Length: 262
Image (cartoon, rainbow, N blue to C red; front, side, top):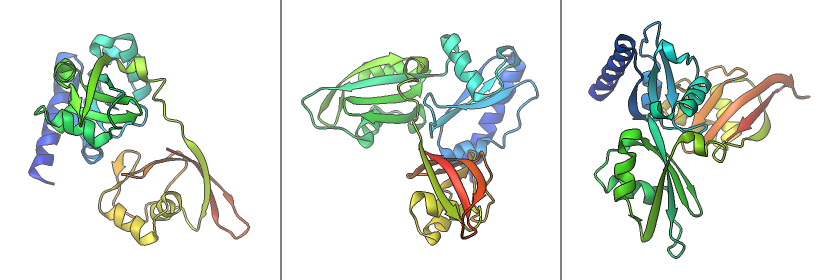
């Protein structure tokens, strides 16, 4: 474990303890998927619930949020409902960024680069969902107004920004998965990665061994990891997969995998 990773875990432990001792909601900055995987190992006091929250359905970048007992939050779904009912407690905001109609289309790098150009750390921003007219960007609550007031251009495009709550945009950003079905000789992680994401068996193994694959939000470095129904698999830069069924067998004796791909 690197020195930076140790500092991250120490900070998260302090956040959990503060939540417990002061009976208040605490949170980290945005974590990438590797950091989120590390965060799952942090021990949380009995009366505290840790959830990961990114503002969008299926977000890759999330805050670790520690919820005290009085919130009655026990799951991520509970947290989404709680923040919708108590917006003042929500630790993030969504910036609805609209680009002018005359400049060429902008991409993820354009919007992220513009924010970074303000001297802001990457951990202040979460996922960025690009659309034809602009993007939706998750940011920490404390930096939302600063970014909205100072971010006026990306590339050659002029921007207009509106600060919103996640509950105001969650319906339009609800991920719509695609049902997929394929067969595997065994429910190994590398076999499922190969057949779902269109990579070679070697490519799947290398991606896993290089920390690019996560099972149920935890980094998995074992290609032979057995996958079960209900598991969520994320391959960075490729997408995510929810395993729905592993019960069928083809005429050739292979396992039929039914899943939803995002």
